[in-house]
Length: 324
Image 1 (cartoon, helix red, strand yellow):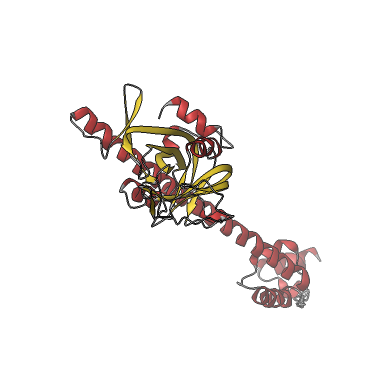
Image 2 (image 1 turned 30 degrees about the vertical axis):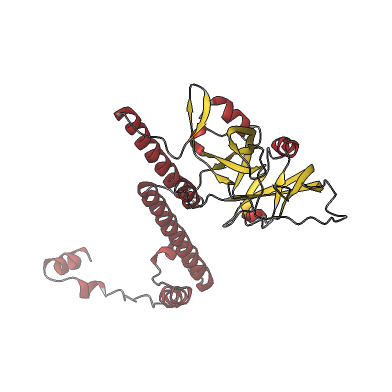
């Protein structure tokens, strides 16, 4: 993408975009030939529309919905083809727009359809304050005796649109009013924009470049599809952190329950860790049982002092007698 093209696009965006984030395509918006409605734009109208259509959005079927927006015009030019004549005998002129869209997962299919020529035909929506008869020049709003499509004096009658006051939008449509309006293909040769149905690939370098562009487009689209996702490794690490935190939280909860059960049962705080149970009820029951044991009174064994003589025998008794 030429740096000048990127500058024109970024002049319409809120942030600066890189070339690889964007998809661009040229589109023939309208011309000065007679369309299916029996109307044509004047040369002045085309020049005015060229100015007004910069920045205008592209939608589908002229449905003015924000969710229906698909692309935007960043540049225009009126092109004259001296070798082509219009149905009314004039030199053919047409308004070409250059549109862009941001590559996303949601519009990847649309981009493919544009490249494949499926989404091609377009139609413009604008305001023309002047609609005159090509035969007599009368304002069509006041009426005249001439009918569009009929020939008068060798000339096809049609309505000339002029006095353009606004350009609303341009739309992808199935059947445009102007047969030649639609997406076109182009290539650059010597700095001059040329048009043809396709660009032939004649060298290995050109082939490699075309393949690489296709790969880059596919990679960008796939990256956008998984934007915000995390890698399997990061997901496993995050899962382990959650598991560890859950276990730690459960351990602290059980410790708190044991301490409460011990306190309610009147046990010493150091006995709280001895309590067994998975629920507050089980811990409370175990604490009550332990309290019943620790608080139960035991009689102290009574030992009577034996008689000194009964406690002595043999030599000891004789010794006692001697002492007496």
